[in-house]
Image (spheres, rainbow, N blue to C red):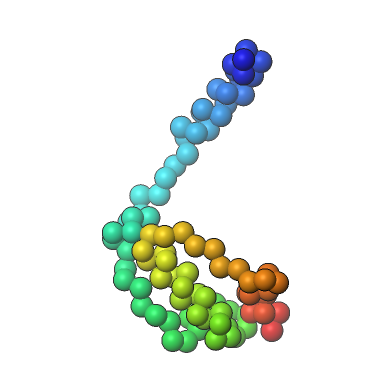
Length: 88
């Protein structure tokens, strides 16, 4: 049914899908990622404010999960976890 009324759209989708480039970086393979090293202080690439203790703990948790190849979402109940870094 879809092919009868929207074959052009299906073809466009399939063209886009086949042209998506994937990264060939070894970072995408959890087996070749560096072992997680716990951050004791705020890394220099995070600018605009100073991380609080709980934010640094959250950043370490995210980095640890990344090093294992696991997905993770970090949020708090008011949605202001990183907003304090931006505003202070």
